[in-house]
Length: 317
Image 1 (cartoon, rainbow, N blue to C red):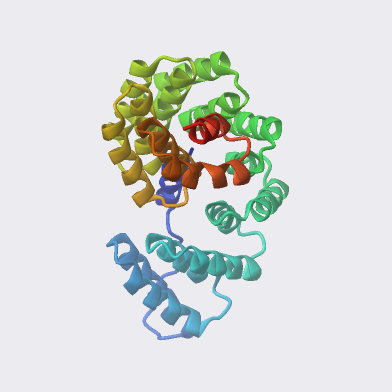
Image 2 (cartoon, rainbow, N blue to C red):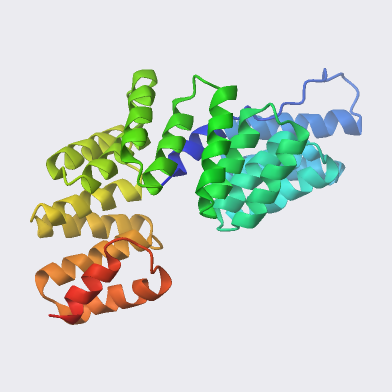
């Protein structure tokens, strides 16, 4: 379901490490590498990550152990959606500065995006040893435990993070998400109300609210909630997919399939969108196409809701 935009917001809030030493007139290696770092930072601020990477490489060519240059270069690779390269540079930053908290945190997020959930958990454990009083240590722990489906541990981690940063509405949404997975809809809704008081313009909040409303059979309300999420952030594939699902159950399949296909274009690997496309074909009476989508999903994701039900309906066509 999540947290692509949340993570990106955190990344965008990172203040790229600046070289703060005075640039004196002599052209020492220390001064030169610092100048290249500053030029890279300027290019990154100008949203020119390719040029930024070139300057960071110049700094690294002068000092192959320059942790800040590796870190900033990793952030530039993220702007270019070069996840493997970003993780590699963060690993080098950590190699040369083992207590580099922000690099470990960012690498953990990268591992999550790359499907390497156990490595993300290892980085969260490393952060907790470095600084257990920082909310990001617990936040990364919660995200990694969520991906590993250790929901009680994830909920505890998000609760700990929220205690350390009580004005962060995202952390309440994280807790509500875990409660949603545990089918504790009332508790999840209570947390979402608190989060909405703090930040009514949080898109994930409204998307999660829509999912709970769908589970409760309140389809028009679910549709309204996800439409608000899309209004607040129109870049999230799973928002469009959820809207498509609700339209399927509102007997508006042709509108639904357009949104589901749009979601698949944005994120071809989302199994929930593939499931919804299978449901669409069941509704349309297309047995062959429905089985094409639902049979593999039943094998790969046997616990996914609606898959078994609609696979049986497809087989009965």
